[in-house]
Every structure is written in structure tokens, then in C-alpha cells.
Amino acid sequence: MTIKNALLSVSDKTDLTLLAQGLVSRGIQLFASGGTAQALRDANIHVQSISALTNAPEMLGGRVKTLHPGVHGGILADRRNAEHLADLVANNIQTLDLVVCNLYPFEETRKTTNDRATLIEKIDIGGPTMVRAAAKNCEGGVTVVVDPADYTEVLNAMAEEGSVNIALRRKLAAKAFKRIAAYDIAIADWICNLDDDAVQGFPVHLDTAERSEILRYGENPEQRAFVYRASNEGGVANGAVLQGKAVSYNNYLDLDAAQRCATAFDAPACAVIKHTNPCGLAQAETLPEAFARALESDPVSAFGGILGFNREVDANTAEAIRVSKLFVECIVAPGFSDEARALFAPRENLRLMQAIAPQPNSDFHGHRIGGGWLVQTRDNGPQSTEHWKTVTEAQLQPGFADELLFAMRAAWLLKSNAIAIARHGQLLGTGMGQTNRVDAAKQAIERAGDKARGAFLASDAFFPFADCVALARDAGILAIVQPGGSKRDQESIDVCNAAGIAMVFTGQRHFRH
Image (cartoon, rainbow, N blue to C red; front, side, top):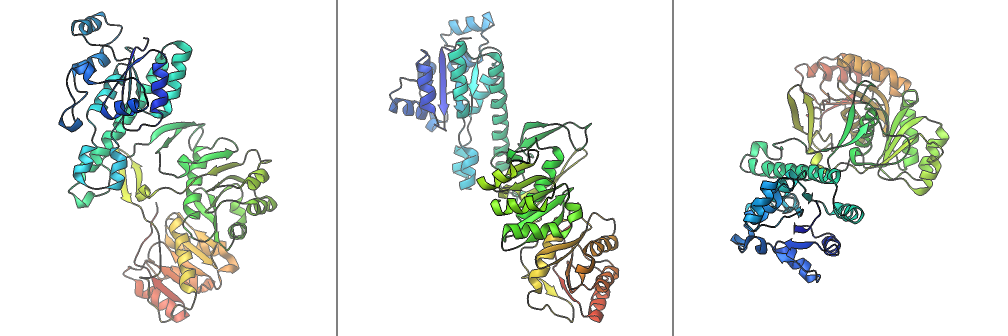
């Protein structure tokens, strides 16, 4: 299984000369397609064109160059099969023992243009065919490499063993097949959506995330679990754990919620998460102050929670967390200063995750159901008060709109049915996951306690009856925001009018199941 001949055909020229020099130093003959061959010649590396294998020129502007028995016979011949080898000799075909190929950059080009002619030319034909052939024949002695990150490992293997062992060949073949699958899905998603406005943006196939880290167990010890990572999308799945124990399945769920909650605000913000719901949430002028106010929201529930921040955690914030003596399992933030990490270091089990917010591709949200998926565009939450409508005799006072916007964002982040009570950018009481809105309102008011008086209440969906508004009135709520749209809206408006409470309709529901 010694490598004698290598075929190189790459769009991504990263470390190409490093690989080629390593191969040549071992006496390996190089063959390459047009652009790759020219790059090697420019680096003074001896290489033969693919036409030396095919005895035919590249044609159709480069569309046809490797689709030939002189190429694919040399790749597909099983070195253990005497008949295959005899066929090669009879047809004067050389074995191609190493195939290095990455594909035309279709996905990258799609990010920069919608021009059909340009994208069609970026649909690779010969490349995927060579890669599939080489990956198929990994047991028969062929090594395939589709990622420049693997060049060094291949060179090291040849230096140590004189060849590429079967375990590494299998690993590289698996990576090649996954790359081809993702490539084909990207093309199918584009071409199947070209002329149908109704499905624009919705993928034909769901998620090419790759199975990655094995977890100790799932939500419960008897369940097995993995992390699947979609590259280049940000989010906690691609976050870096800077210290602490391994992140668990439930930790990942809560870290995702913590990041989503904290990054919903522009001002410095902190979220305290328990079971994917914010039990504490606040924004402030500084991150330490945001943490202190978020903890004050519900210090009982905060014990054993997950913290999320939308700014780098600095020494002052780390010190505030330390002084609070709050037991937290994980903290997620865009970054941690060296001083902050030093302060956290004695807490060996505390997990610190550095993660950027997900990329816009998170425009989709899915639920796995029996037999398939439900997929929808993402609810990005309330962004402004521009289209809100005050429906009561009492009008909003200066500052009320901002107060209600924070409260509604908090409600949007809670599981339905959801009620949020807030004031001065601080969550005071939450009712979430209830089977009726009255219980959600009672729960939020009870948690807010005396702080509900003079505060602001938000509901993720309309009030079907006036009972929730009556509860808010009795608790001393100053103003209410809700979507509106119930047949009984007037009953709620009447209660507000009688009590002098301002109420705003947003016209936008925020269910989260």
C-alpha cells in the first residue's frame, strides 16, 4: 500500500506547497489539474498534468479533465485484487494511491452572489467523483484527503510507517463522504428553491451538523447523548470551554438559553437560567451591576443556575460573582479577561464557556417530532415600540414604552404561557410554562411580591378574559403590554380604564413551546 503516485486537484491552495514538497521528498510522482499544477510549478515543484494520465486535453473550459479511465481506473483498482491490477497493466494505467481534492467553492460563492450562471459554474462534477471513488477504495489501498488540516497527519504517517495505515485511511474516507454529502445538500437547497418564493430560505434537507462530542448522558442518566456541531455558525455548540468539568446535555440546553437571553439586549445584560427559563434578567450601565440586579430578581431560584452575559466578563464582574457566593454551574460570555479567569480558577468545577452569538443562519427553528421535523422562521422577539398601539384612556407616560419593551422581551424569552413583571430593566416576577394564563399571572405576581406595585407587566399572548388584568390591577401594576386580538379585548380594556392602567397592544404574539 505504499504511495507511489498522487493526484492533486484543489480549489483551496492552503498548505499545498507544504504537502507537495513532503510528497516529492518521498519520491512520489505528482499529477495535478490545471490550476493546481500551475500553482505547483510556480513554486518550482515538478508535477505532471492530468493529461499525462488521460492522453486527452482539458476541454469545455475545464468542465472535463478527470472524467476518464486513466484517472478513475487508477483510483478504483483494488490493490488486493489481481484481476484489477491486470486490467491496469493491460490498459497502461498507473495506480493513483493518494487523491487530494477539495471542491469548487459553491457554498462560499453562494454567500456573495445569487447570479445563476456564476453558481452553476461552481458546481463541481469531477472533484466529487474522484473523492467518492478514492473514499470507496480506502480498503483497497487509496488515501483521500479533502481538508488541508489533514495534510500534516498524512505526511507524519508516511514518515513514521512508510505508508498510510488503514485506520487513518478509513477516517479520511469518512470525512470525504461527509464533505460530499454536505456539498450536494448545499447545491440541492439552492437549486430546489430557485423559483419558489414560498420556500425561499428553507433548506430542502435539514442541518448538516456533524456528530462530535460524546456526552456522559442525556437529560437523564439512562439516555445516551452527543453534541452535533454545525461549523461556522457560532452558538454554544461551537463554544470553547475554558475551564471546569465536561459540559453536560442539560448544561448545553441552559447555556444556549443563557446566551439567547443575554444577547437579546443591547445594554450590558446578565441572565440567570434554570431549566432553560430566565429566573433572573437585568440590564444596566455596567456588567457587575447587571449581574447584581439579575441575581436580585429571584435569588432562591438562582442557586445552581447558569449565567449568561452579552459582554466580556472582566475582573469586576468576576469579583461580583465571587463575593455573592452564588453557586453557579456554568457561565457563558463572548469572552473572559485574564484577570477574570484567574479569579474563577479556584472553582475547579465551574464551567466557563466562551461563545459568540449564533450567525444569522439561525433564522430557522425546528422541533423534532415523530417521523420528521417542524421548521419555522425564528421569532426574533419585540424589536421596537414603533407599531404598538395604546388602547386605553390612560396613555403611556415618559419612559413607559422602554419599560414595557423590556418586560415584553422577558416574556418572549419565557416558556408559554408566559407573564413577565419588570421595572427599570430588571425582571421582578415570572410565570411560565403554565396551562392557563391566570396561573401564569398569579405565579409572576407572587414572585414579584411587593415589587409588583408600580411595575410593568407583559404577556406573550392575548388575555382571553379580563381575569389576568384584574389580578394585575390588584397587584398595583402600572401598565400592561400584550398582543391583543381576543374577542374579549374590550373587557380587559374596561378593567384598565376603571383602574387608570395604561395598556398597549403589540399585534405580535410570542408563543414558545
